[in-house]
Length: 627
Image (cartoon, rainbow, N blue to C red):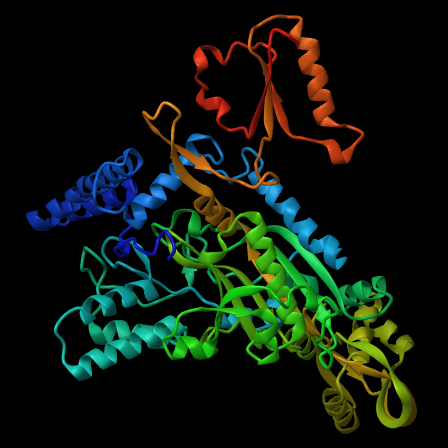
């Protein structure tokens, strides 16, 4: 049983914005409007309630550390204790990431070594533009709905408000029909199947009001702030790798026009969504994403290295197990692939590599599981999706998505932008086929479009047969035709003398196909936070008078490996300390570099007690009088 399995569940976090400005605004509004005294008192009581909650959690933390208290820690108390330890040692600062001492950098370095070097991946840095988002239906499909308190102006997630209402109502003594209705709304809401109008209709039907104030709510909308910027959930930033056919062809050329090959990208992403209240390190608007895109022949998804991970045993929760209410079962990865639970060897191989990355990093393998997404949870481009979920004080949270996107991404780009994302493979015997041949008249196109001629030619040459036949019919009937050039961001009109479209018989010795994309997307911030929790433990001090909080990092994750200091402050020890530091630095030897700190002033270890500033280090090298 995991360490957190015995902890009582967390109470639902209220949706009310409890910031000082929001509370003051609500109080001023009630006083100006002449609200009854009990309503004003209720707003005034919120800060006191917060102080009581914080004091209660702090008492539990102190009892847990000292060993006093018989009640087990709640999830909130456990979380506070874990967060305070790296916080007190400056592993993170307010408005800062975890990288104050280099934990992030060490994890990122290990990620690149684990994946890029093993798979010979191409490093890529791509910026995500609007065109691929529209091509893959991200703009239309992803939306964060807001509702506003019509009196105080406080904003809430529409889904959260409706979900909290249904949950509270279900705890009451309701009739069978009413309870079934609310359960259906709750299930549909959590699956993301409710549209904007349906959410609005449900809120009005059940008379859902703003939390705490009980004021009416506005209609749901998807904009926020003074600029009314549309808010939508952020897709994986690696979509930028596939933003143009030219980019894919360049990568294919780097791999000698052969499949499979992989691309990796690591950088910051921006999550354009309304932040969840009370989720601390779990949710950020800006976060680090590490992503892998592996391109493979859709007819051959075997992997030459699968045998290296086939014998791994990991907790897996298939779709069928979830529907039947079963728990995750430890399963051999090779068996999962042979039975079809995991669709193919390449997908299974990357699941195994993700498992090895997380466990070598320091994640507890007994608190790590791979859950197959249900049909209503699937990513837009995913045919088979598995989430690596890690248990922490927030419960089970998704940290890595590994999916077989099939050919959706490339086919959508070809359809919307007119650019062909294709590869080819030589066949054993050439065959005679009838193909549609498109021959642009570059001279006429150059006169008509000048500097944009190349983009128009690329779209014409990349057209599918169905679209090209429609274009040919329009040219024959009207003498001109219109089509979209995605790279120009607009439609263009061409004349019948600008292109020749005809069917010709020819011999073909290569099979042309659209590649499948199998990828992994890592939420690095969540992984690092879970690493803090899984590395945390307490032990008694040598004197036995206190409990020490310890973060048990693997050596390659520990930010500072050691410190060098003399027991006695003497100038003659400075040259020795500098010599040791130089050998640890290893400027000209990359295999000998050891991050460390040096304190040539000395005198910090007097009295036999180690100061808090030195508890950051794995090892301490002390220079004695005999040096």
